[in-house]
Image 1 (cartoon, rainbow, N blue to C red):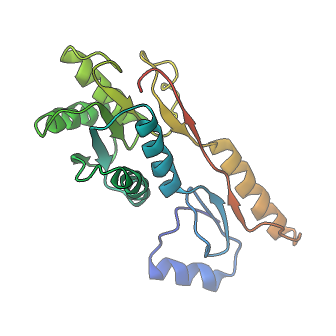
Image 2 (image 1 turned 45 degrees about the vertical axis):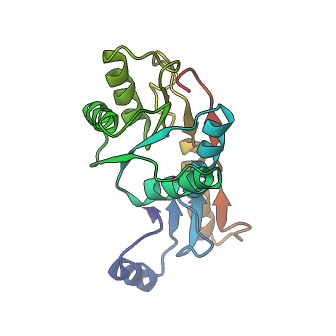
Length: 208
């Protein structure tokens, strides 16, 4: 069985443990998985994003975010880095799932009601693309007037104009490693590594 994330209801955990079947949790990281795990640290993604925007000289960030657990972990990592550099109380607009271009546009519009920014950090590339559309509709040049950073390295991120600075996670590697772990467990092969950290890459492009 493959489960996305590491946060499950007590009832689901009981069912899984009683079933005594191999389980791989994906897209997250914890030292105490239910069984096996293939993922990455969302908190470290946030930290890397914060360090990047600071290295580029940005000091007035705004956040455009979805309310889900993994995005919250990224925000926690990001804000911890910003706070160490005396950047507190970062303005934020939360939007519902699923993310969309229209939510990216309306979210940035709401942020503009709260202040001025030199960089907008988005919890997904979709929100980033929508935010860029809204910024450009107001005559802002990206990244000269406003920089934008996304997450996910979705298919359009590299071909968008301007291309989107984002964080890439190897989805294929996660799927392949999870499948290998399950197959090895079913075939009763020894498991050398029950917790696999795939890692991530911050990709600098034109938007920030």
